[in-house]
Image (tube, rainbow over all chains, first blue to last red):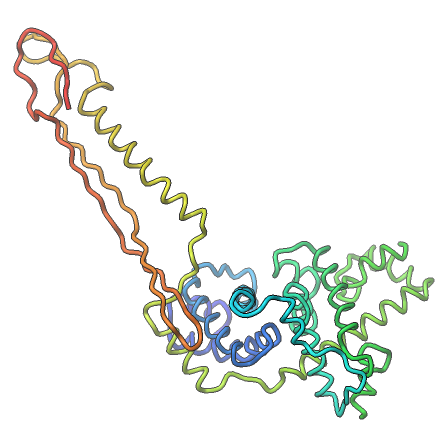
Length: 191
Length: 190
């Protein structure tokens, strides 16, 4: 079933098409949601709600983007509500940032996996809009104009957020990791 | 192209989405500017590092069979969570309701008093303002919203159901028959 057939079947609430959609986009959405919200359990709930909302608003899908991109836009919106609700019910953003471990000089890096975890922790310390552009750019592999269209912002704003987010990440990842320096990644992988 | 302009376009340059002339200008600038050449190279390296790091962080994650079952069950459920109406739309609907009623009653009153119409002539040659045997039916449909909150896992979901509501008013004039000719004008009454 191609994208157009899948979209038509989704609008018709065809159970087989829904199953195919979950199978084809669900795993990728889960990974993106995990990066966006920071934990896999809540990411699973967000993905479930994404499909429910997609089904409810299937008539709005115009085919101007891929089904995955459309689903991802719904996921992004839900993630914003998720972060807003968490801030409202639990702690404010300042406290949330305090939960992110500060770069420690004695941080021990055993392999690239630890570097990835440190990067994820640093990502969690970014504000929502900055985290979004990083994930869209470097995980979803979107070009600048695609990020701007996806977020409904100008390309200038997208670039500005990206520059700022990269600078923030560089400051938040422990210097010992040497992630952002020349041949930093290779050094990490060798260890 | 100068360094500031190159810095502004470096992401598009790396994307390969610059137009032909801009791309040529960027490459010409880089050929003569070591700092910008290095900046582009650094952005490439950062992109590669971040892409690898993010991919490693979530690689291997996939929806468990249980999660897929939950999604299928949620999709099969007849009641669904719908996006909340925008506050402006809600306000508009609420504000339009009394306006619609008032406008409908005004039209009904106009029809019954005959104000928009010319005086009618009764058989017998007597002229007067006729009360038209008008029945005005006003049908106004609206929607009663019901909010239902329920627990699902560790979250509270709200379901909004819209039940159609129909208000039908029938307005009769005080006399449904035209007045008997009496030789003088008969004022209209409601």
